[in-house]
Length: 93
Length: 256
Image 1 (tube, each protein chain N blue to C red):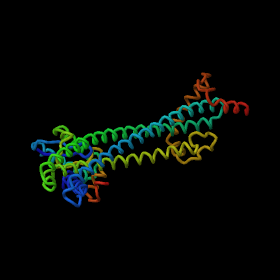
Image 2: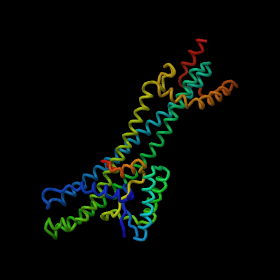
Image 3: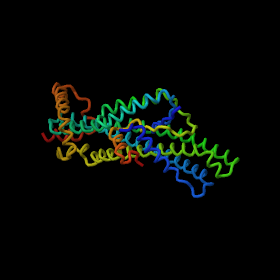
Image 4: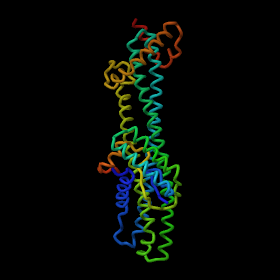
């Protein structure tokens, strides 16, 4: 089992079989960020989040586990994602 | 290029670890962690309250602007009935400007509602985890020495550090959004307060925002002007005339 956190939306447990697809979707997001393509980013990032929500089981509120993977918040913009790659502190605060 | 996920995971874990600043005495670390968790819980509660306050402020502003729209519409009718096409046009331009602002406010209020819901959900999750942590902490402290207890619930401490970082980021995002909205709301208030919207006696186009808005509002104004002209010209009594500000209409008649 793999635990994925979507910032602002909690943690989800995915079967290891669903993790391969997760990586494919993640690579598509990275490609969209590299191309600076906002439409492609919206589409691929949306698909990545949807995959986690659809195939993952929400971790119970009172259960404390560390995450294997962390995804940015659902309303992340292309510019914010780009900052994560530029290394200028994508995570503010 | 590495995936977004691995990049984000690394950045986030670094941040989560810095959240866990340890107490000097390892024996006190569990209690210290718990104190930090309770403080974060208070911060989320305040964050939710702040978002609710910001939302209420925008709702009040919406109500105020909706009143202005009704008032300006009436003024436009009065002005046209009094053969003051210039004043009617000014009123309609200001009405279009306010209607534009109202649409923006609707969007902002929905966004704040979403923020509020997200923070409430996060507060619920954090609260449940903090309670689990407290229970685990008490159990291991009863059975082990403080240092051993610390090791036993190391995973829980790390997991909560993650949760607290997540909540901290959400609070930051909510605060940024709220501040942006307050800045915009203040700009709209200024527009009303400087008389650009309410004071029809001010020289037309004295306000830059009004001028800019008038450029885009021009078509709407022409269409409404034609509609009003048809109504007034065909002798259909406009219901708004005579309501509220009857004074200017009378003085305009006298001046003819």
